Length: 423
Image (cartoon, rainbow, N blue to C red; front, top):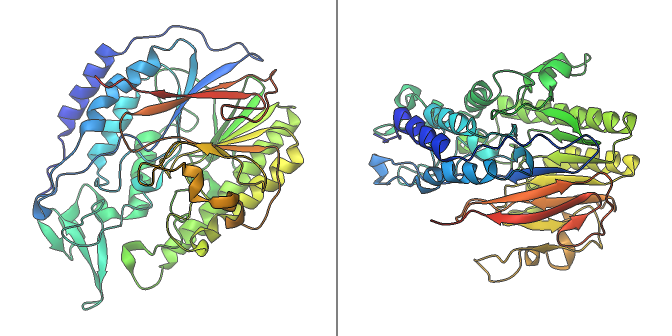
């Protein structure tokens, strides 16, 4: 039986984090002045214990989380916190208890926290390869029986009741769990701070009432800058990997991707309309997916991100002022403009190759992964994630600044990487 960390122990850990965190009482930045935001994602990563596979647990990053939160809390310059998705790794079961433990931990932030879901907490929960590679507690198609072998608590099973508490990795059920734990009150942020955000649940296009389900999509205006989040999970936008490796994607999966992508596109349009109407100095888009990362797959693996990319490119061009995208997913810090054939790229060294992450795309070939765009007033930051030391990005938005494009600046934005001290 998988030995999931008892919820009582997780909540105790959170309580310790509260005691260790340094509380900040600094007021938010004055409207029109600089705003500093802490951005992180793909954290905390680990591994679930799973006895039938002989797999032991690794909760070390989770155990470092209280100190990590305390570091951000103790910085008096931070106004908000943004998490760009993936609250656990692809080797951790998508359990109700784990989701609740992260939601509880995040309540110890003394700043408002805005979160957009990643693939690991819902879209990829179905993935498993075998009993010895249980993935996130999902399952896989059995061609001999024509059914699905689930990763049950005591081993492989055809009975979904044998993986209660993690829904056998069903993506729709796990997205519902994410919404229950992190978005129970539309328009309310996490953490103890206050930030007025508008949710698609309450501000959707009346012509598309079904968009009300996307409570996780929010937008807000702060210091002459419009911020917007969309739920676009990494990997393939939940389109190129049939759930449970069945021969062809189910209609439920196709409908999920089609409807959510259309809602994302409309939500982006609404955010840019706000920015135009309010004469905003810039727009910031937070999304989990690195929509230009092939990750060893064929180019077609990214095709169904195209409606989102097209909307971003068109609206950014029409806006005519700086647009910054924040994403995680590919784990290595990177600063570039994948909507331009000539923009520079900088980033961290990939430990697997010893070369810059930009070498993943020689001659700026990331620009080629979608139909060719040329949008100079766009920039993208990928935050580091998944490995220790834990890291966050300190992003300052100064609506009165106009920095050149460098490794640490762009338009009204400047940033620095902040590694968590290892104790």
